[in-house]
Image (cartoon, rainbow, N blue to C red; front, side, top):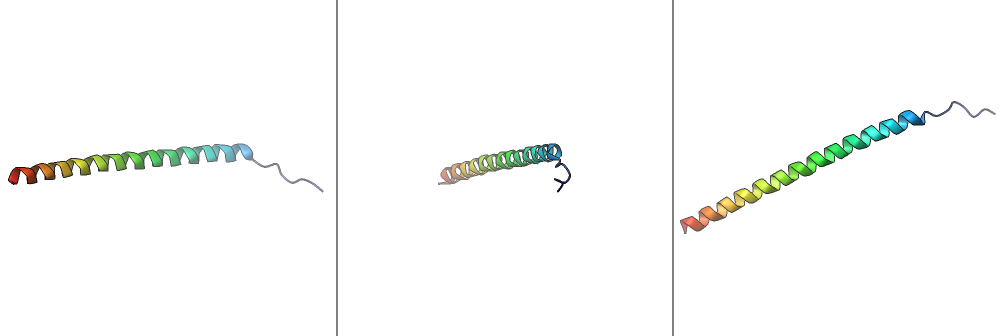
Length: 56
């Protein structure tokens, strides 16, 4: 009985590496976006608090 064709593990490894790189990039972008959003919300809340304190 033959073993069958040899598996192409080199391409699989490269593909996995590229997919992992892509996922990491997307994760980093998502985290960066979340941090920007948090900073913006904090800035708006601070401005809102200062405005309400000034009007009292």
